[in-house]
Image 1 (cartoon, rainbow, N blue to C red):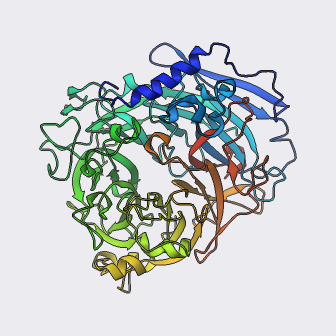
Image 2: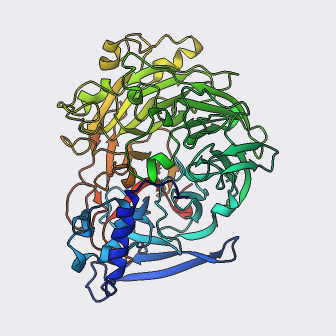
Length: 608
């Protein structure tokens, strides 16, 4: 899988070798822990390879004592930070908790990845505290990535391992304790690799996007009769995988078209005889319309395996795919749509054209709406189609991240290119569109580029959706890119808030809304008008977009205005936001961790 890695990779291998050669480097079991009263339970399942896989809970005493208010939990899927997260010249300059020379490199060794369970109950004395770290094993270096976008009562939590190409299925019915329902291994999904995101269906099953190509390069034949030629693990073309409630694979479907995609816009390394942009990342569905939408982001090996300069901007994708899921186990690819460049597009800089790197898509929710949105990470724009059931959906730019930049932070410019947007999600009532952007890195657009502060913004989309298929909004001038669309039905900025103001590219990558509210009987119920959002400031360290490893909560007013929740604080530092850069965890002194995705979840007994 790594045979094509450049020579710089040797630096990493050498650094690992130096650490391991130290011999006496061990985790200091005698070091006093900040968590003195921890109860452990382990749930083990036998996977398809005949081996044992587990989740081990480390429950902090008093986290769910009888008589307390029913709890709301924030689950955060996080990876252990270690020497493999970066290329370094020598072990004296390791990042974060890894530094300090060979005498202090205990945390440089790979440690367990985990789901952190954080008390997210408003007004709770333990609000913001980590009450359990559910570690997974025996796999390490999973690079925990995404779960599903929203959790509903009874759902399995599906959690993807980007590097390990595994999907974990967790039982969260008895939170704060977790159990393992099962695990899908790379040998179970030979038709795809590099799992990204998941969308749960009403029957409890889920679809997952596997962004990378079939595990073995060359021809691959799927059970449904599809035949594709791929360029190997973390390459192209990717696949759509359906799982049952235990993580067992029900079907695999290639995202590729038989004739391939536009050769000018879709590069592959190594090249394929049928060029393809089929690298599905974002995924959402409308079951009532029997339609699913996936967005193509990038050929992943060029993003995650080595932080080198992209050999071609056309490895980042401009495409969105719509699927007919009438037969849930045999999805049919209905259309491949190409997003259009906008007024900022510069032939000299195709990487930051508005169409480039379609990371995420989000559907509308109400029965009389059929539209969906797609966002571009490097392109920094939001696109919309009014009808995902159309034979060939047409997408139009309706908002540019540049129009929100100054509302996020007064020191920002109004250029949305390279904004590094990640999470995008419609509210359940279809009134608002939530958007998280990391911000533009310093120097991304040239040597004098100061970069931009990232954050979260909210768009009012009610007039756009009300216009139906006859909407007129088009962002097609530089003035509209900088200030918002001129047409009356264009989305308008309802709220914005910075994360790490004044620090370029240090904002959030991912987010989740809180879809639960406390009812008068003391139980939780789902709400269509979320009042909180949680975001995490981490992408993928090996890509060069690391973040500060914090998780923040923001309040959302009924009119869409945002404010940082100053009560959601780290239990050790007292600073706003839960900091995953720390020495101690309930599972031990393993040092810094990387929080990629989050979900608001309630134990089954506490929610209607």
